[in-house]
Image 1: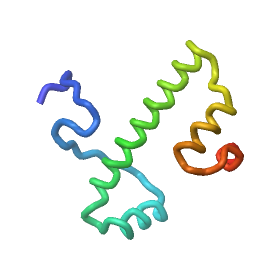
Image 2: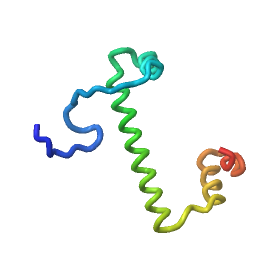
Image 3: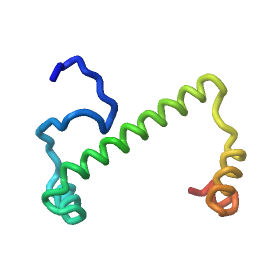
Length: 92
């Protein structure tokens, strides 16, 4: 395998690494997925974190170009999506 090959998150061959976790975090993961599901669980968690990081970057870029979103408009959209009142969305 060439080291210069670019893969998207979730693509490409698996590669073993060493990861240190606190005992409590590891136990919580094992309680959810068992000993044999830890790697898959961490893979999915890493992919979700990458997606969140990219979303944060996208929002920051949007804010730089357009200015920050109007909090009242955000609350109204959140209320529409969640079915809650705008006041409840603002508190969250």
